[in-house]
Amino acid sequence: MRSCILALLLLFAATGAIAQASIEVAEGPSFTLGKVYRGAVVDHHVTLKNTGSDTLVVSRVDVSCGCTGSLLSTDHIPPGGTGTLNITFNSRNFRGTVHKTLTVNSNAADHPQLQIEFDGNVVEELMLTPEYLWFQDAAIGERMTKTITITNGGDVPVELTGFSTELAGLNTVLTGQTIKPGEKIEIPVEFTPEKPNPVVADRLTIRTNHPRQKELVVPVYGNIRPATGK
Image (cartoon, rainbow, N blue to C red; front, side, top):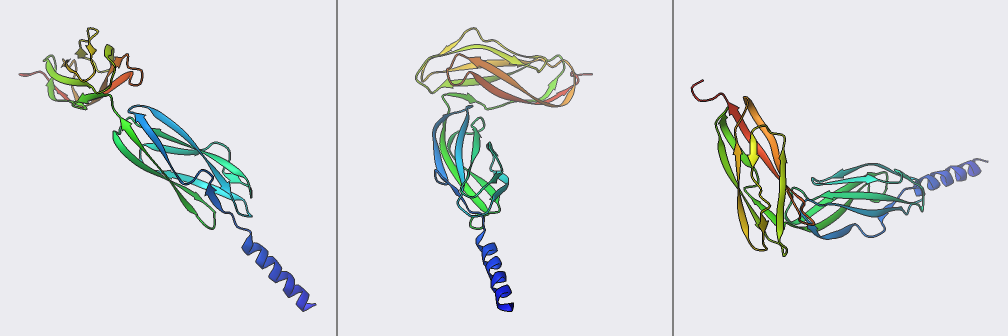
C-alpha cells in the first residue's frame, strides 16, 4: 500500500515538474522595419507561441523609448496556442539607424523575460534647422524674429501650404513657396508676446503637400517678461 502511495506521489510530482509554459516568437525574435519616413507610425505584428504544457501567462511588455507593445488577443495562451503581439514604433523623434527592444515578461520556464529586437532606418526628406525655436526673455509688445531653414532632401518638389500654432503672437508668412529637390529656403518666424509667461512651451506646425511628411512640427520654448521700462 505504501509503495502504491509513494508511486502516485512521485507521479504527481513528476507531472507537476513537466507541466511548464514555454514561449517562442513564431517569426523569430528579431525583425527589421526597413525604411521609415520620419513622422510615420509603423505597426508590426508578431506571434507568440506557447510550446509548453501549461498555460502561458504574459504579465507585461516592457519597451524602450519610441515604441509600444500590446497583446491584441489574450495574455493567457494555452499549451500549443498562440497570441498576437502588436508592436508600434513612432519615428517622430528619430532619424537614421534605430535599434529597439521589447521584453515580454511571462511565466515561461525557458524565457521568463523574452527579448524581441527590431531595427530600421528613419529617413527625413524635409529637414528643419534649427529643430526648435528659443525665445529667451521675450518682452510683451516687442517683436523678436527667428529663422527656420527647411531643406528638401527628397526627389520631388514640396510646397508649403500653411501653418498653425496656439501660441498668441507667433506668426510666419508662407506664400505657397515651393522647395525643389536639393534646395533650401529660410522662413522668418516673428513673435510679439501679448502677456507674461515664465515658461513658454508650444509649437509651430507647418503644413506641406509632401506625400509622406504632411506636417513639420517646430517646438517653441522660452519665457515672456514685461515690456522694457515697465
